[in-house]
Length: 542
Image 1: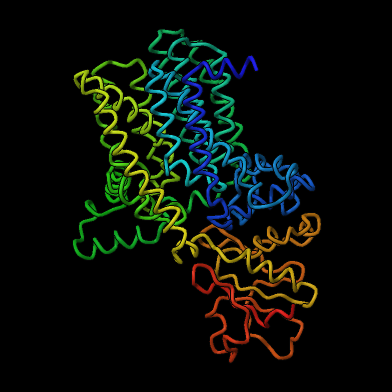
Image 2: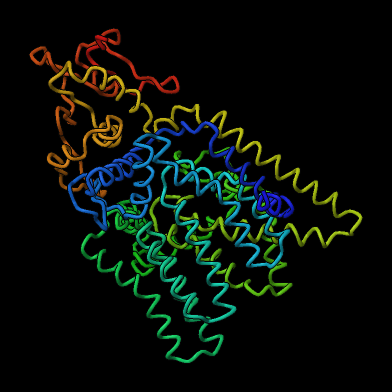
């Protein structure tokens, strides 16, 4: 009771708690959507396999890389799910719970960060509020994604770098090295953060006129997790990252070829000149209002036009905040600005267009700087108008944010293209399979929609011990992915239904049944958002 009274007397803590409740409401509302996609199912089933056997789906004991679809997933995300599965079992809510919880406490993280950066409780409260209603944060935290863990790691790193700015101490370096190691084994943007941290360690050491020996020692400590990661990377190289670099895209070579046909001057049209042009344009596009305010990610899994990553109000106050940061000569202005300017770099190297996931670290400086700008712009107004000004700004902010969330909850989730992108329909299909499992000797499933084998394993909670004996991944394709063609009674190479195979259940997309003579009345339909996803033949007998 004494502690509760102490908390209630602290107005700032009460306000932050309210923001956390707002964040929790938005995270937990309609938590059944989006449906589990193939990447999530892979993370979850491998965590289930570790929980049950200590091995991944292919039988590797506590691996530092998970083979999964052949891309060698980094391990931290999977291991973070294991305790939750051990406690609560394998289900959609359990496997997403660690990410939802991190998303819910985002206001606390931004409060602590902004208070450290600016030494001002009111700015920290504004940042906490913006984090609590941010679609960018919550779209990713509502499902399994490595970026949610990286957000917490990156915020921790910025706080530690600010402390290092104050005092160049070994203790801070050790904590930074630990976070660097976790980040490297979590997601590929961890490599960027590792370099970012190393740069700032060297820069701060020089700025504070530390001895060469001290700077070298601290840098070496920061390099240790990078070297350990590099060794594991040599043993288990990630095929996915290499395939995402824009130079690996066939369109890159074709574009150069087309330019040379039109104007055959190799000095102007070559890999170097095209690379500079693409990277520059991609980089600048990440700061555009089209990406940050109106369009967002082109991948429907991470939003749609109508869901603003940040509002136009926040976008405006980022520029105002930048002005005040340098006009007031804030102590950590270069630290937070450098993160803003470098965060999109990893995203610009991809052949894919604007990505909320690869540029996710931008949300940290965007919210922090916008909060700073909002606060100091209010104090630039005459005192008698200050409260009115602040009220009108917050009203406009809530107005635009409300329509983003309205679109997300009431429109986005009902679009057939969105449910297709999320690979919805497997859960409903798996329920039908489970009811009829004992009636068939073979179950043939089309592999046109993602990786069907992982949905069968996940939704049926297939014994990891039994699956490990059968797991055989095909050779990787040009995108760096392999396939599982069969396990148990499942086959993932669709063939036309045959009258000689009576004990066979066929599951495919509607077009898979073209020319088979099977009519819509003879099949069971799996429909999501008024769109047929699967046909199942023959109809269920139960």
